[in-house]
Each structure stands twice: as structure tokens, then as C-alpha cells.
Length: 142
Image (tube, rainbow, N blue to C red):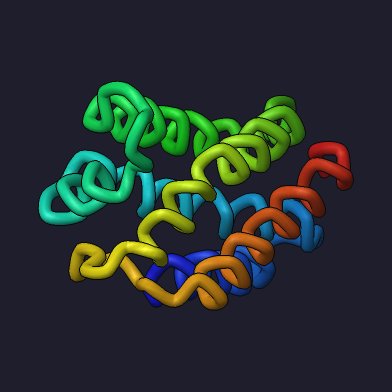
């Protein structure tokens, strides 16, 4: 629940100081990706993320590290208006590429404790994050 809450609260707080909803959403999404990006490096969440990498993908620990770095880089890109659109597009693509791990986790008979096994909830959250990234990308960095 902390991840969607970070997006919502971060966006609403930013909107108090910024006249643009797309810029406020960029700040909220950046806060969310900072939270999730850091989680890629801190146990027990790192261990749980490694556990949900779909079988057949090489080097699960390396994939978790790479996606964590990409999330943090994307968060930084969202905060700088000239790179905001490309960061939003890249994070949109990253969300799509990581979704199979969410499906895999939801289908695991005993997923790690920190991972939800409710595919409907995971899908709804993912769609919301994709929508926010799309709004930011379409706003043109404003």
C-alpha cells in the first residue's frame, strides 16, 4: 500500500506548490520510483523481488539490480523538465517489461511475504502507474 500512497500523496503535496497537474504527477511518480528503486537494494524486499523473477530469465539478482538502477534514473529524469517526457516514456516501457514478474508472483503457490498474490490488484495498480506515466509523457514536459 505504500507504493500507491506515495504516488498519490506525493502528487497532491506537489500540486500545492506547482500550477501544473502533469508536473505534480511527475513529482509523485518520481517519489514512487525512488521508493521502489531503493527497495531493489534492501532486504528483505530485494530477496523477494529476486524470488519473483520468472523462471527462464537469466541472472535474477542482476535483473533486480538493473531494474532498480533504471527506476532511480527514471525518477531523477522525471524531476528535470527537459528529460521528463523521455523519462516517463522509459518508465512506461519498464513497467510493461516488469509486469510478467508481477503475474508470476501472483501465480506462485507461496509468494514471498512482501508480494501480493492478487493479480487483479497488481494489474489495477500497474494500469494506474502506466496511466500516470502516459499523462506525463503526453503533457510534453510541462
